[in-house]
Length: 123
Length: 110
Image (cartoon, rainbow over all chains, first blue to last red; front, side, top):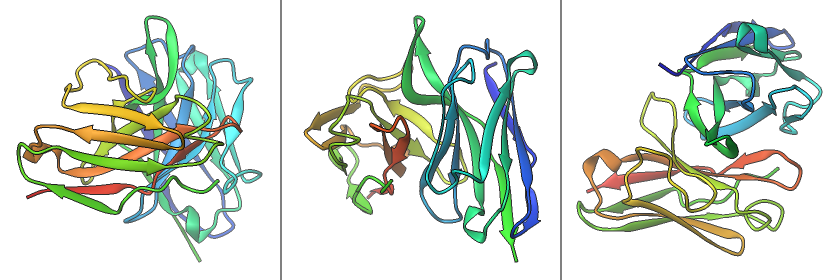
């Protein structure tokens, strides 16, 4: 079964740090572009970051640039998000999501999502 | 990076068709044919319905269809069913190689 499982969320003081992990299983992880998407309580989806299979194309939303760092370990089938200088507005459910692939072609649509991990940044 | 603009809510009766709009700019929706649509039920992860403006992933009903004109993309749901109720989000790839989501549209099936 194709699956993504996030972990590492929790309660952290504003200004603190947290590292999220996303464990992939059921598919060959290395070729896929992976994304982090978050959803604040009662709000809509917000794209946070994406990283391609070789980790040579990495992009961030302006709201997290300079504070968050995305990385991956293809040998461990894992995606990470290091979050520093956390603010109250970073409070959200964080999802990892895989970009769609069909017949060896890759697309800008996220077809597999984890269940999410909750981050609460509070003063 | 402003969010794409969607109506806050739409509604329809079972069997009817509804359309949800998604307004962007020439830097996102209008720049490429890389618009996708998602359905999210309460407490659940989003589900991909449409990618590349008009394409459906395997397993998604053909009652869902997408289109685009200029900076505006649209999702049409035909033969509305109770299970279609939920929050719909559009998303686009941008000229900065980032992604942007719409604010979301709550669909109510009357």
